[in-house]
Structure formats: C-alpha cells, structure tokens
Length: 461
Image 1 (cartoon, rainbow, N blue to C red):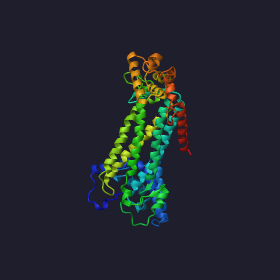
Image 2: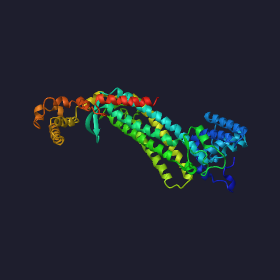
Image 3: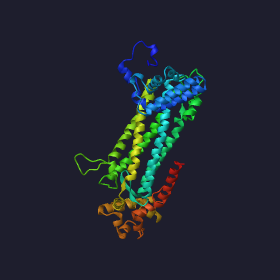
Image 4: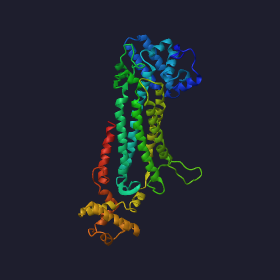
C-alpha cells in the first residue's frame, strides 16, 4: 500500500525521516482502541447510508479478523506504514481488498488518534482507580490491626507527639482517596468523543457523531472540531493526577525506607519486596520503595514534557502532538506497576510494636501535654509554654526524660503540679487524650476507620 498521502509527492521519504516521523514504535499500544473506534465508525457509516450493508459487513468481518490476529500475537507492524492507523488499514485491505479503503471515509487520522487516546485513557483511568482502591484496602486492613499501636509522630523529622500507627497510615488512605476522586472527576472530560471532527473542519459526509460516541461509551462529543483534534488537556489532567499519586507513593515509600533502617526498626518489609548486597551479606535493602520514590521523577517529567510540547502550538493539529503518547504510556505503566507493588508490600509488612512503644518513652514528645495540664490549672498557654521549655531544658541537662522527674522537680518550676502529672505524661495517655474529630486517640481513630470503611464500600456498590 502506497502512502496514504503520497499522491502529491514526487520522491520517496528519506529512510531516516520515515523512521523518525513514524509513531508505530509506540502507538501500537493503541491497536485495540483503533479497531474499536473503526468498528463504531463503520457501523455509523452503514446506518447513515454512506456505506452499503455489504461493504460494511466486509469491513466489519475484516476488522474482526485483524483483531483476532492482534490478540493471538500474529499481527506485525511496519515503520513504512507510519502509525497504528495505517498499519491496521493495511492489514484490513490485505484481508478484504480495496473495499477496506472505504473505512477512512468521513474521518482523518487526526480525529482517529484522538479517539484512540480517549478510549485508552478511559480504560486505564478506571483500572488505576481500582488499583488505588486496592492500596487503600491494604492500608485499611493494616490500620485496623494497629489502632492501639503507639509510635512517635514527627514534624521536621523531629519527634513531636505520640500517635497511633493506624492514624499515621490512614493519613495516606485519605491522600489516595483524593487521588481517586481526581481521577474519577477527570473521566467526565476524557469521555468526550472527537470522532467525526475530521482533520480540523468536520466532513462533508452526513455522519452521526452522537451515534459513534454512544457506541464507544463516550458521554458527549466535542462541540468544536478544531478543539476536538487539538485538545490534549485530558492527557495533561491525567498526568497531573498521576504526578500526585506518585508523590503520595513517594512520601509513603520514604517513610518505609526510614522506618526499616536499624536506627528506627519500626517495620520490616517482607523479603519478597527487598534485595541484598553483592558484597555485604548482612544487607536487606528496601529497593522497592526506593524505586517507587525515584520513579516519581519520571511521571513528573512526562507531565512537564507534554505541557512544554503544547505551550506554543497554534490550532489545530501539529506533528508536535505525536510526542504526547510515549509520556502517556510511560506514566500509565509507571503508576500501574507502582500500585501493583505497593498494595501487597503494605499487606505483607511486619510492624514492630515493641520498638515503637520503647521509642515514645525515650523522648520529650509528651511535653505539649504538660502545657495543656497547666492551662487546665488556669495558666495562659504562653506562660505554660515557657514553663515547659525550662523543664525540658532542665531534663536535657540532667539527662532525664519527663517521666523520670520527681514531683518536687516539677514543682520547682511551678506550684500547680500535682501527682496526676505522671498519668498525664504516659505516652498512651498522651495519644488517647486527643479525642477531637480526626485526632489520634483510639476512639477517634476507630471512628476514622468506620469512615474509611464506608468509603471503600461505596466503591464496590
């Protein structure tokens, strides 16, 4: 088959140019969507009387044959035919003859590729949402086992206040919930059909764009044909949501890397998610969270790359837009595999309760509760804050933690202290005192778990 556009040219394409301008090296991933869009298009052409029933039946059967060969791994693609659209059309014509060329009636590769990418992202976004829910389920299950597990909470990576391990992990549950919501909201804009927009101005054929949109599962059609073929906002929006997903994964991965170090030893990742050293036999390296942390840069780079491609493009389609696909495919693959590894890694990890418990007894993270204690005795918070600062300084100088001090030592700083200060300073009391909505007490965390459970249930309705 000669080039679809070759009639106006007098020379063959330079071989380097042919290879570098071809997109089949990556857009072959759209083969299923290309066939799906073509089937909807041919059904519409028949219903509008643009193709005869016999022609439509031939093309339909030919597309089914090509589709079967694709799924059986028997379909080959060639740079000579540039992209997935022309490769599929070439295979179709090989199957049924010249009538296969009528498939392209009333459409352009411009609206065809846009349709393929909309279909691809619709499918992949829904799959990623399912994988996000799997990660949330793993966090929910783990948290349900550890509402009473206590560990140091940090700000500035300095010990701040004792918290529930479940409370810490559920923070990521809600991060991923916002990610889920962003993807769900983006479906409304991915579900616009560009098919029938032609190259940029529509077509002279009496097509029915609503018909093809309905057949393909789109909610609506682009009102403007130029916007339809040049819009890549839906990919940018997906990549932006993906960047936030990976950012949240990276933050959680960083916690796992820190917590697994011997200096912390708060958790132990399962052997199946770690590797060893080629020279140091004692090593167990958290390679999976490290890789997840690093791959965030790939996804962020893909987003910036596409924004840079689009920023100076006039309407409508430009060859620059061929650069939209590789970053999109890579982002999808990176996010999918990250979520696929994250859920079982969380489910299989060991939480070292005793180590966490010991940690909260060897710091000053209960200091804020002394301030609250004094406020309840009538002191202004700022005055109480100053008193506690002096007590902490004293403890540091004397190499004592707050629970090591005697009542007399406390009273030397303020006469309001009584014997009940020691119960107040117990780390578990400190944790469970925070009963406000969204707080870290066991009671509040159990309420939060109920809310998380209802959130997960809605996704299976």
